[in-house]
View 1 (cartoon, rainbow, N blue to C red):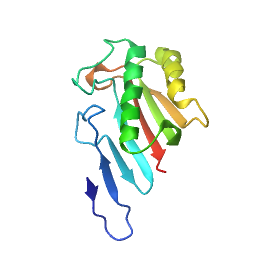
View 2 (cartoon, one colour):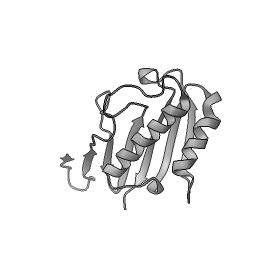
View 3 (spheres, helix red, strand yellow):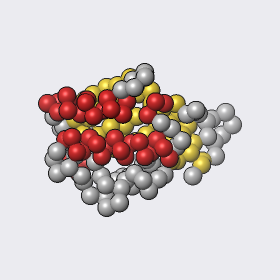
Length: 138
């Protein structure tokens, strides 16, 4: 879905894929704007069922989060190597090392993206981890 823009403003295009969970609120999975892809935060929802994956297991959740994020990137024609910035939200910073190890499997090759990691009081659907990202379109 594309949005017309006033002269000089970047064209916006929503990225929508059934390979990642449908949004749980009034937002898109990602938006393309001016050669940049802005991916909404992903939690460990199974795209087929909409159910949370992992039952509180942060490693299982992280694997699903990364799979969901990669599906959104792929739908936009991107790879993890085009990601320039991520934000990792954790309910418990004690999970940092376990999340980091799995994160490195996806984003550790070549130039790793800039990143922030933030502890939060809660996430939607009682998730333990959420990751969003920004990528440069080829």
